[in-house]
Length: 460
Image (cartoon, rainbow, N blue to C red; front, side):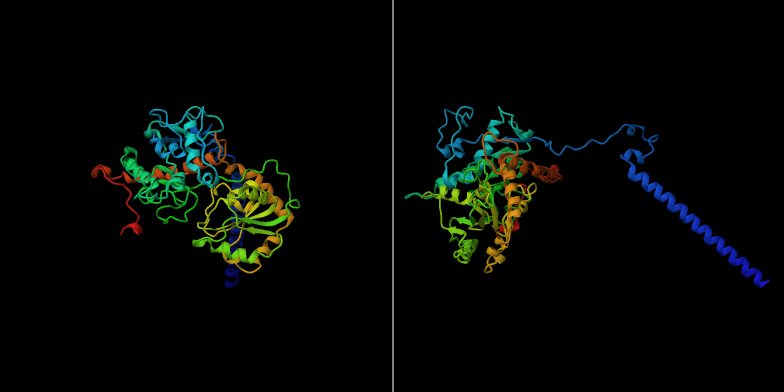
């Protein structure tokens, strides 16, 4: 009897295992069929019982066209002309705030002045939007501030510093300081500034020393800068502000048919060698490279034929050094791009314009400062870059150079429109901050000062 029971138990166990295997096989088959159907499904509506949701039967999700960008709406203050075109020695006709740029565009002064002319080009672009919508324009000037995404302040602060920051004899202050005081008083009294605390305002301060006094009072605004070298991080940073390219001084290399073998200079630098702050690196690299035969490393300036000399040098060089000076950035990078001379960037803290769109590693070489200061590291690194790699970067330079061109009228994807694009990308953050600041506004008295307090590190 015991043997019969054991045999019966074995039979039952064998049957259970077979059943279990059969069930697992069936489940695996159903799973594979379901997975196959899911992979072949082209739309979400095929996962859903459309009898339950009949409105989905003919629904096809729209494709997002990333090329189509919303137009940025900008309100521009009609500032007195002393803040903008009068700084270029333009004389207003009667009570006119602006020149008639359809017949006469005031010229911006040349030399080193022009490299920081961002406010000038943006102002021209907004004035032109009143009568010219050509060229793939992505910004329009509105004349009612309540319709605007941002408020633009047309203060030519860079040329104001360049021309009027020196103190003349028998003067207690200079025009640069006076205009900064006036612009602070003007802006903080405007309903647009009081309504937002200034965070939806856009101010170009591209020269590192421009708005030197006013920046600590106008800090909630979005600054358009060349870099953050002379700003505390709570006053200016990449989350709040926009980095714009310098306007290159060297003319663009049109119809460039040169190549690796027709550019005899391996590495080129011409400019100020002895600098303060972080600029000691230039001096150290000069001593490291000065005996290399195919390296051009000399002092130079815009005077004494400096620009023609630099133009010829860059256009006949394979690589152009861009080394940190008084600040992390310099115009030299953009002169190199215009010359199709592959930039070698030695500036650990540099911020680059439009880096969300452009991959600078495709057309630039980056070397850490600590490595560049090692004996023979820099020159050996450059010599080991192959002709093919250089040629790829040279071709890429020619593809991207239009992103760094300032011009009037502006054209699609030039520097002017790329700056506006960068501003537009900050708008959702601005609106979120504004909306959040109004949560308890019904319980509070109207603020007489900025609704955004001064950063803690600036409170004494």
